[in-house]
Length: 206
Image (cartoon, rainbow, N blue to C red; front, side, top):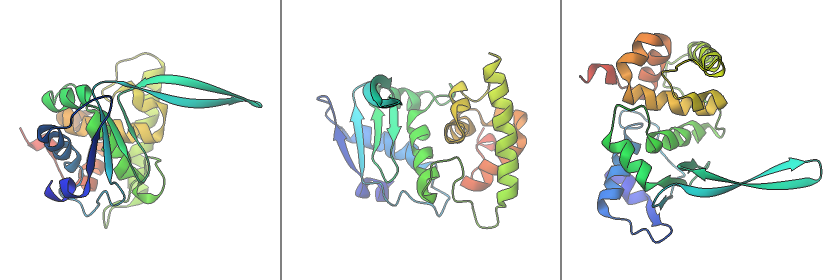
């Protein structure tokens, strides 16, 4: 956390004054993903914090016509930084560690994912961790997750994970920390791969 806080500059947006408590909360949650790992957020220098959900603009193309769409967003992660967060939701995610939602862990999972140069749900694996085992566990779990989400059945991992492999990876990491016993029971292969990747076993934390 000290290394993280020394490396990262926090910026408050829309009048938000960033406090030491905010920095510590974000650092603690972000560092969960790397505390036992050789991976590090090498290129990340800035974290931008809004008071609450914020507007982002996304362009879509229809032939030669470009449409600008405005969306309310809780967080964003850009390859090589920055990470952008809603403080209201970052705070709630830190206070409630069992509801299956954590915007800080979600966005920093994207940072971890992007260390390969691509944000695609395939992070840099641990030494000795086989890609074939990772791919099989992730694809099997993702396929089942998409089927459940599309048929409006209840999912352990947030349904947003069905929108793509990179979002499934981020939401699976959130579930790994927030509902570890359930994830280990329902998706043992996925849980095992995430446990090996992060060198953590939160299902044993009690």
